[in-house]
Image 1: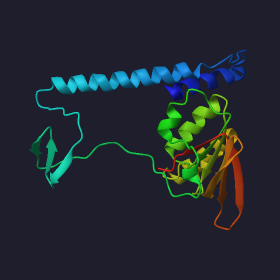
Image 2: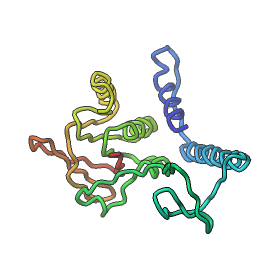
Image 3: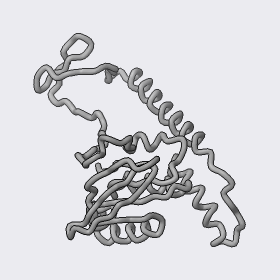
Length: 215
């Protein structure tokens, strides 16, 4: 939903290309986030109900622990299976960057639920989540900077696609590829991110918020 909202804003801003006089008068971002949260919560509840009604599936909503390689303890009893699949979801990777633990940084989860877009945002990383959130926040008025260690954004994509995407993104954001983040510090009401290339060239970028989206 956040990307759909961002797309809607960009359609209005690009309307002049089609000789349509249109402007964005305001964005109720808090409501956009609330609707997203309500939709996702409803989907989760619907899935729970369907699981409960499935005669071939037993749903346990509690913490568990392995007793041995093929047995877990659930609700005071042991459940054994030939194969046990661990699919608990992923967590954002937060690397040991100097000063990072001393600031209130954002991860993708926190960024999704920001009801007030920051004036400026420094994104650490250039993968899918990083560039999607960069696009969303830039669309609603945030000044976005992306810092990526590899030579292009979305580096797991085909090389030509990654290069083309980086060029497009560079028209919307300040993009620094080939830069490894070395340190982060609090500066005034915001933060400063330091990064450098393999050749030792360094940059320092300021932003109200820092988004860690490195995997």
